[in-house]
Image (cartoon, rainbow, N blue to C red; front, side, top):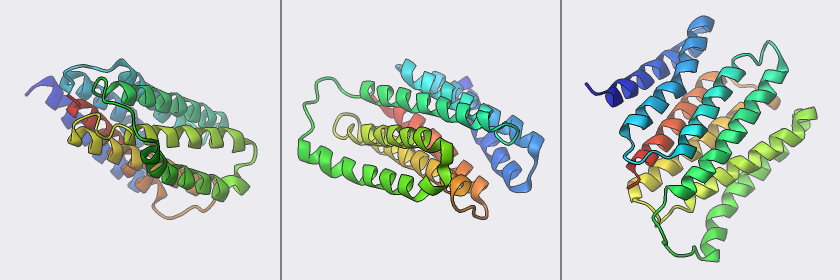
Length: 221
């Protein structure tokens, strides 16, 4: 078995363990499993990608840092802010990576295409901010900035249409959409309306989102 398959297998194992730990309330197991999710995914990408994209690797590293920092958010609210900052940097690096994981000189994207594809994303981001705003308090500005960058990340993935292989395009965009969904659910649960099973749903969509983004990057030729 190659190292690539070992890392991919480790990713799926720690992901399943993490989901079980979140559901059962196994705090110690949760800390270990969550800390290994992105590290194992980085290992998989390093082995599977024909041409490694440094921005993508750095993006995954900052997401790992965000995961670790958010593990401490119940002890100190500052860890939530630091985790938010780490993920913000991760999204910016994903944006740079998406722009590089494209074919050279594909031609400009028509303005009406940009408008039609980007508008729904920003409308959703604005509606989310409007919904969460009453409960954001002093975090209003950081959360709004984060939501904007998250929307740009999703939009940049969509703008790869016709600039990469179809499987790479759809994998990356499905992953980016799930990432946005995960963060939206996390925000709703934290700042507005807590709901049953939130932690498990947030982690499931996050894990699937990260995996699909990385798999899409691997499939870019």
